[in-house]
Length: 197
Image (cartoon, rainbow, N blue to C red; front, side):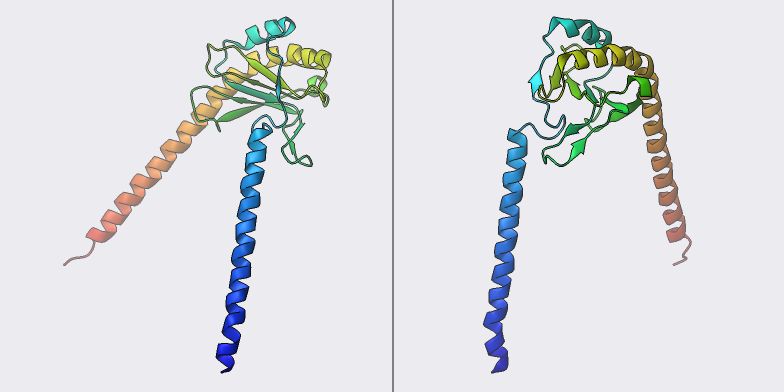
C-alpha cells in the first residue's frame, strides 16, 4: 500500500524535471537565435563595415596579398555583455585555405597595443575586398586608422612565417598521429598472431 502511495509523487517529480529541462532547452535556443540576430560569434559586437572608407584603402592593399581571410584585433564585448573576446596583445589571423578554426596569433609589441581599438577584417577569398567591422560606439575612426597603420606592416612581416610554422606543426602532428596508429595496428596484429591455435 505504501508503495502505491509514493508512486504518484515520483511521477510528479519526474514530470517537473522534464518540464525544467524543456524550459532550459527553449531558453538556450532563444539565446542562440538572439546571438545570431545580434551578430554574435566571431567578431562579437562588431557590426559596422567601414571598409569602403578611402582612408583605409592603403592598409587593406598592404594586407591584400596575405593568405588570410579573417583578421581580429582588440578586446570587444561578446554576446553576453559581461564577457569579453580578443586582446590588444595579439592579432588573430585565420587563413583562407583551411578550416575556419585554423588561426595564428601574432604578438603585438607593447608600444603598438591599443585598448581603445577593436576590429575584425573579413573577406570570402584572397581576391575579395576586405570588410572592416567595428563597433562605432567603442572605436573612434582616428584610433582605428592609426592602429591599422601600425599593425598592417607588422602582419605583412610576421604572418607568413607564423603561418608556415603553424602548417608545419600541424603536418608534424598529423604524421606523428599516423605513425602511432600504424605502430598500434602492427602491435595488435603481432599480439593476435602470437597465439598458436
